[in-house]
Image (cartoon, rainbow, N blue to C red; front, side):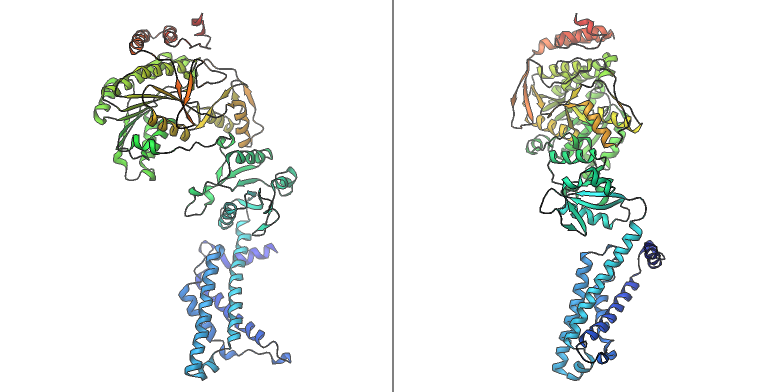
Amino acid sequence: MRKIITQFCNFIFGKHKNNTLPRRWILAVDMLIVIFAYIVASLMRSIDRFPISSLSVNWKLTWLLPSFYLVSFLISRTYDGMLRYSGFNDIRKIFSSCTVTLAVLVLSKFFFLKVYPPIATHYYPGFILMVYHYLITLVLMIIMRFTIRRLYNEVYKNTGDKMNTLIYGAGDGGMMLQRTLSQDKTSKFRIRAYIDDDPKRVGSQINTIKIYSPKTALTPEFIEKYDIDVMIIAIPSLPEQRKKEIIEQGLALNLIVKSIPAFDKWVDGKINAHQIQDIKIEDLLGRKPIILGKCNVIREIKDKVVLVTGAAGSIGSEICRQVMHYNPTKLVMLDQAESPMYDFQFEMNNDPDFKNLHERMAFVVTNVKDPLRMREVFEEYHPQVIFHAAAYKHVPFMEENAYEAVFVNVFGTKLVADLAMEYDVEKFVMISTDKAVNPTNVMGATKRIAEIYTQSRQSKTKFITTRFGNVLGSNGSVVPLFRKQIEKGGPITVTDKRITRYFMTIPEACSLVLEAGSIGEGGDIFVFDMGEKVKIWDLAEKMRKLAHRPDIEIIETGLRPGEKLYEEVLANEENTIKTDNEKIMHAIVRKYEASDVDAMFVKLHETLETCDPMKIVAQMKVIVPEFKSNNSIFSQLDK
């Protein structure tokens, strides 16, 4: 049977461009339906006559009704729609056209009955016959379109490799998704069932597809019975914790889990099949997204010149994107990495959100430790707000390159901060890290020293420090590393099964940086609510599940030099006080006199000139007594 249907469809569609039936064919079929409907209506009208032989059709009138309907179809263009995508709009157009035609026929017959009765009597069918004909024509035209659509879908869309799919959510999102997938010829999803948490919906159907409860559908027996491959979560407003639970249920059943975006991401109120998203590791952390107000940030950035150092990095680039939405007079993006900067410039210049704003953007390639070039930048642009994100951040690498870590992270920050004071910058926001708290590595200690320097400055410039933990997906972070290891077939390497970290997304971290910068009054160190700690081993397990690679091994490799088992956001002696934003806390930290800090920096610079890592680290420990290195090379300095 399927072979016969396929041959029929190939005959109908196959000879035509893009498998599209010519419009003249559709119009011809519609007119045949009109004529056929007249014959059926005539027989129905006379069916109560006896004997049966008295049933008749007045063939002299067959020209009138088709003529009226043809004119109406040509005017309303009912034949324009592609039959494979027939839907509500096509039904509405057919209904309007047929109804108008019936009205014209009835009114014109009434007119001739009053003006010249012979025309109405000899050339017009009876009123009941016209109504019968109207109803039959309307029904047959609609049936024809949906039959062709069904045949087309059966033959052309259900061939090839299709993935049996569950749609989680039988509301508006689920129905819209099903409609989109049914109309998309390239879709690889075959919808087998809906799942919904609402017991009132369970047992009913949407377009002949049954709705099940999670207890029924999310079971090994159901998945095996219907050979389910994919589950798409189609509830855009689903709470994060519930979404996490559903994802984990799907992954436990070895399903590919996907989701649709929020309603505000849809195009013209519709969802595109290409918008179906893979589940990200962020979705499995169960963190509520941080949503901030914009009033404070607008006040600080709008119509001002903003400088972002480290602009090509993960944090710096996202700060730049967000800053541009607050309409600065000029955004100066500075970084020493030429290739990443080139890529970032291309991205910003081609971002539709920043169309016609190119004159507000400036891209500068230089190093924050170059005094001549940095002074030239300040002289040319006179920034009013600075976000200082330039820094070396890789812990093991900086253990081997203490000189560069101090030169960039400490003296690079000092140079930018000194220029900020000299050029009367309004605010200087430094991006720090939780590794600066009770540091156990060179990188963390350099960031703490940079904090001490900026916090000790007293001038017109307000110095603000922001601390946060790991950022998901940032360059060099554990998530891209695990992803690469999975792509290569493993193993996934975790330094210690006990190790934990705080995580937040890049947009969240940068939003908090902007907000903290707007509320800071100078000398502030702000720490962010990072949520719950995440075990890195569990993170690796989740990523392995997302990739559907249970065969990949996770192994321990041992802590690297300078690496902590866990991170802190506050030192032991420190406390916090609340701010107006519940996600941002003000840290109460030890104060330093500027003269004392300057003296320590002179000694650190003198030590730096020796290029001796042991002497450099020893001097760092003088400035940061809580710096206890767990690197076997530097730990002997603690004795």
